[in-house]
Every structure is written in C-alpha cells, then in structure tokens.
Image 1 (tube, rainbow, N blue to C red):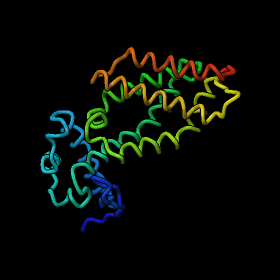
Image 2: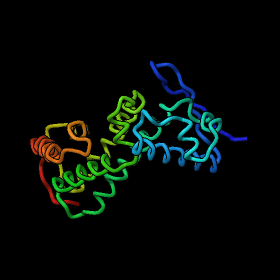
Image 3: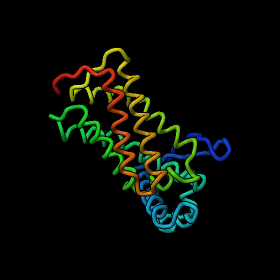
Image 4: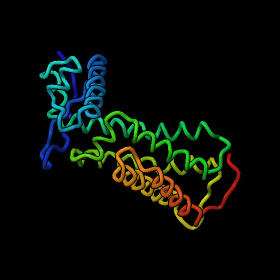
Amino acid sequence: MTKAVQTIETGPAGAPALRRFPVQARSRRRVESVLDTAARLVDELGPDAVTTAAIASAAGVSIGWLYDFFPNRESIFDAVVERSFEKVTPLADSVHEAMPDAGWREALAAVVWALFDFYRDEPGFRVLWFSRFQSAAMVERNRQNDLAGVGAAYERMHRHGLNVEGVDPEHAAHLVIGIIDKGLDLAFLVDPVGNRDLITQTIIAATAYLERYAVDQEPS
C-alpha cells in the first residue's frame, strides 16, 4: 500500500483541498514524473486542454493513483509552479558562484538575465504563471520564497562589493526582488517569449535604487 502524509491546502474558491505527499522513494519518483509530464503537456497543449486523465495516461500511472496525491488538475498545476520556484535560489547561487570577481552591478544583471531565461525555458512554469490558472497557492509560494531569500540575496551582493547605508539591507534586497519580479512579469505579459528591453529597464531600475544607498567596496 502506498504511504503518504497529508496536508490541507486551499482549493478553488478558498475551499480546503487535501494534498498528499509521498513518503516512499518510489512514490516520490512517480510524483516527480507526473509533474514533469504535466509541465510538458501544458507547454504542448495549453493548460485548458490538459486533464488529469491525460496526465495520468502520459505519465503511466492510474487515475486512482494520481488522485491519491492530487485532488484535481489545479493542484497539479500548483505543484508544477511551486517546484519551479524552488529552483530560483539555487539558480541565483550558481550565477554568483560562476563570476566571483564581478562587481555587484554585473552580478545583479547576470542574475536577472538568468531569471529571464528561466521564465522562458522552465517547463510549464511560464504558461501556468501567466494563465488563468495562476492561483493563490502559487502567489503565496512566490511570496514565501521572496521573504525567505532576502538575507541570502543581500549577502550574495555584499560578496560582490555592495554595501548599503541609510537603509535596512534586507529591506533594500526585498525591494530589489520586488522590482525584478514585477519586471519579469511585465516582460512576459507584453510578449509571451519575453520582452528583452523591459528586462534591460528592470536592471536599470534595480541598479539605480541600490546606487542611491550603495557604498562600494572590493568584492570579497
């Protein structure tokens, strides 16, 4: 028998929806396969055309097994997007690690462009995030990630020579994250494949805000 733990998440119209998380390694792998499959189908067909039956069939699982872990199609879409957000901090870390001698302005621009590529290329993410299926659960996960990551975000920039005075560093980092989030959203709302000029303007805006408080130092 499949073992799982249960949590309550918010379903349509704020109703509680039961979401089960697998304990056994085999079931975890199958859940990951389901999410990979759902993301691919969303990109290929569009989310309105993707059903739980289609996901189950393409992933090679029974519809009953699927419903053991996901109460409906929307909960699968939520999980696809939430899993994508979990990749953002490691992505930013890898960009910074790849350019240890860069100044903070160059590092900031590189992270924003990496996020642009991520929004464009991450399976299922962009299509769902900018669709009618964007949910309160997705938005809340993004908010939680932003809140949890502000300290690390400033520390990464600090290692590249950024030091701010006259403003709380974490508040500054949070505002910059907000500028970047909004710029990315606008870039893909204006153009489904992303408007590069708006990304350039986002970098200019974020950099200008930090320069208002920046006291430059050598990257550590």
